[in-house]
Length: 198
Image 1 (tube, rainbow, N blue to C red):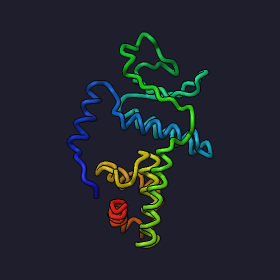
Image 2: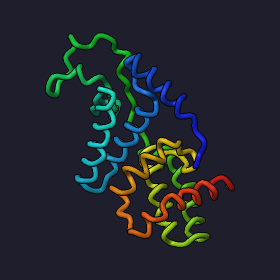
Image 3: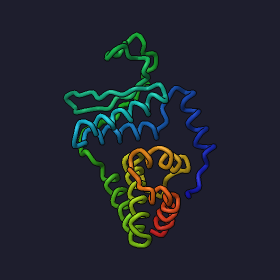
C-alpha cells in the first residue's frame, strides 16, 4: 500500500473548510465528474455522474451548475446557500471569491488524462499477465476508479483513496465475483508493486 500522511491531508482539508473554500482536489474531481457526464453514452450514466458530483459538493455545503455563453461552457461551483430554487440570489453573495469557475470548452479529454489512462492500462495488463485474470479484473476496477474519480496514476492513490475504493467503489460499481472479493487487497499490492517498477 502507498505511504501517505493522512494527518497532513486532513489538516489541509480542515483549513480549507474553515476558510469556506473547497479543497483543490474536490474541485478537480467535480470537474472530472462533469466531463464524464458530458461524455456519457446514455442519460442514466450521465445522471449518475451528476448525482455523484452533487453528493461530493454537498459534503462541503457547495453546489454546481454549468453556465453556457458565447465563450462556451463553464462549470460554476459555489456555496449552496447562494441559491433559492434554481436561481442565485445576489443579495446572498457576500464573497464572490468563494465561487470557482472551470472552463469546459476545448478538448473533452485533456492530454494528461489520456496519458494517465494509458499508464494505468499498462499496469493492469502486467497484473493480468503475471498474476491471472481475477487479479487483472481487480486491477482494472482500481484503474477505473483512479482514472474516473481522480484522473491520476494508480500508484498515486493515498490510503484514504484505497479505503474509498475498497469500501465504496469496489462493492458497488465493480460487480465483483466472490473470487475477486477474496483477493482484492492482494490484487492492489500487485498493482502498486508493478507500478513502482515503471
